[in-house]
Image (tube, rainbow, N blue to C red):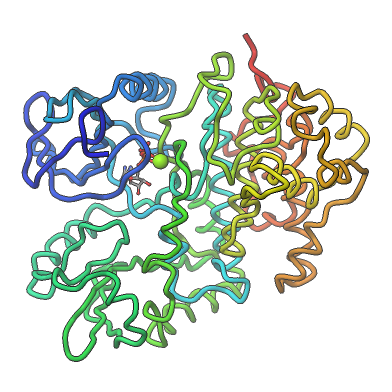
Length: 492
Ligand code: ADP
Ligand code: MG
């Protein structure tokens, strides 16, 4: 994609901005539309994130929409990444729209993959997921109140909040000897030795992992093999609040953003998933802390923001019918029916399940009998509750004949049935109380008819979120869907 019309080919210390005030330092991430870089703002002396959009016109137009979307948000809010500046930049691959954002940390996908000790269900600790769910519901409430639909909620578009001071230490550290021959210019979030091909690192089953240092909440580890440092990683740990009252006030807001990009399946092969080389007992202490606080009912204090409004749209002006990344796509979008803000609630349901189990809730594929859309519907119909009204709703789809006719496998699923969510969570090893409370929450989010989906205001009342949801109304959470324009269809 580094070609004319594509990503900008950049270099360290390249200057950006109307006054050349942004100095490029290193790559932070990338998406389907852009590459994102750490820059130093020479005017404010702060580190910020520069998103360089691909230069082709359609990407520039969507970037202009993204900038417009930000006009509907408070310039400094706790829910959605803050936009600071925007400008054009000319390069060998064309003219690129550039956006400057407040600097945030890792995205939730990397965070989940690198999490030191997964639960027995292979995901994050439930208490942490509870906190993330609470934050994301508040952020969605913030967005939906402003009559905006994100349309691409997924783990990659949810970013950790970070502390600038810690970040400065982090950068100083990278100039250290150990990191001299290690290179962070890969998409694995690891520092890899320049002379080591990734393949050899992967096959090395047992390098020693040792903690080398920590700054604030950032810990550094190296991986050694045959006496040579082959890789290093940095990891953010949590500060844990000490009282429930304090925790509560910490959690009255969050934010996030997202864009339309398929999870790259090849990523599942990368270092991020090779847990044998990632973590061993030296992370015990860190996990014990979380476990201890979990059993005390205390909440790990870590916050997230929604990012990537690149595909967001107003409830009365949809830009596209093909929205959402496949695994997080709602049934109405698959069916080609109308959608509204409640399509984000579906994606959030998929996200919560993924954080618990480390697996997609729905990961459809093509087969001889079924195309991806059909397989997706099959998986949905197998899992969630279907009542008579849902069957009628399915039949309103213009694509109904095309999807269901002549397909006996799919047709056999058009029956009234109960949700299997509770059962599936029990099978994953969750306790009966967690399974029940979580499946109640997920079932309210994963309704086949977008009209029936519960809104963020009411979801915040869920029993599972009981430690968090006191004083929701006092905190200015807005609701409910009866007041919401464009909940299940475009409202012109
Ligand atoms: P795209 O629209 O191309 O998907 P995103 O806005 O989702 O671009 O950004 C791509 C990736 O860049 C994110 O998944 C994240 O890892 C990183 N990123 C984006 N914004 C920031 C930010 N403000 N601070 C730190 N990293 C960021
Ligand atoms: Mg994105």
